[in-house]
Amino acid sequence: MTRAAQGNDPRLDRREAMRALLEGRGDMLLVTGLGSTTWDAAAAGDDDRNFYLWGAMGAAAMVGLGLAVAQPARRVLVVTGDGEMLMGLGALATIGVQQPPNLALAVFDNGRYAETGMQASHTDQGVSLCGVARSCGIAGVYDVTDQQALADFARLLRSPGDRTLFARIAIQADEPPRVLPSRDGVLLKNRFRRALGIE
Amino acid sequence: MTKSAPGTSSDWRDDIFAALQAADIRQVGYVPDAGHSRLIERCQADPQMRAVPLTSEEEGIGLAAGAWLGGQRAALLMQSSGVGNCVNLLSLAKSCRFPLVLLVTMRGEWGEFNPWQVPMGTKTQAALELMDVLVYRVERAEEAGETVAAALDIAFNGSLAAVLLSQRLIGAKRWVK
Image 1 (tube, each protein chain N blue to C red):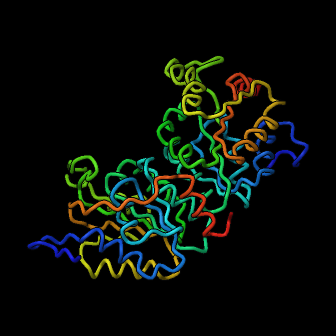
Image 2: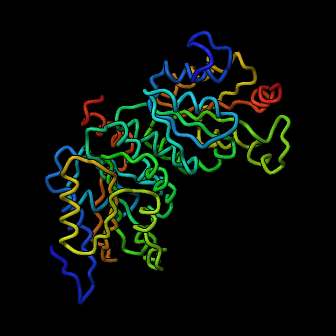
Image 3: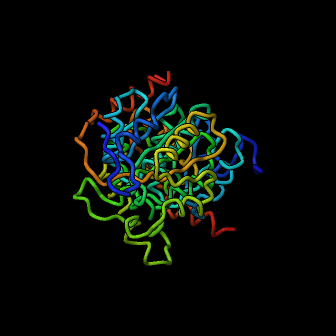
């Protein structure tokens, strides 16, 4: 199960990283972006409190913002990929203005568009997502490149939110077997709301 | 902050605001437009509403989806040019049947001075209808409140709805001042 980092490659295993973020999640609400982070979340265990995006590339962070504003007493975690985040970079400016204290964003950065054939993304060419997040005024920005930093960030998620969090999590550019959750958007939406006691 | 008491407003933008309040709208995503400026100010001043400035209109589709997932209602304010930015993101609202309300101030029609506004302005309604958004138009000030109320009603019964506020309505208001 464990895929050790190779050589001096500091990058983390994406499935282990997702499990670390969700372990003992309490009442945390999760939004995942189109592509691999959705398969990672499903592999960690399907949950009614997961909302998987199967499209709408670039929207994951904004779905998290609307949810965090609506549910201020809950931790809201968005996990998405570097390509998905790059398509909606403006959302970081919007979130930087709103600063919801219960919102955390974690970007699994493999520097690749894994779903379309592993083409290099802008982060592979030196674009710094942490730099963008910092420039947008997001208070807690973390560049996570090892197990210890990942564990520290996961611990922050368990504590009451007092500022917006952003982590770039360096992951290996591999493609573990796909684990696909339901693609029925209406079902995903309704079960999420039911889990919150809304419907 | 407000220039007239609730229920006694004579400004169509106040009538729209009253409709948003009556529908319990709690998040309002917007890209600024001159035609929406008074409505934006009213939303910002209301402690029950979270006014969220967006860098681009498609951000609002995600915001509204997240709000609904968390049990709140959202509405989006934008100019007609921004509708074009939303098209792919409308698939999120459609696929999941999220309620969606767009209040769109029109450019590129009545009395437009900038020809660059015309291509999107003349196709705004068609672009929305291409994605199965129900489109309502407001030409006269006295129709604004009830049309927005009707759009909110149908949206929160599980539809995508847009209200196009015509440039004649907006322009006429601006020019007499």
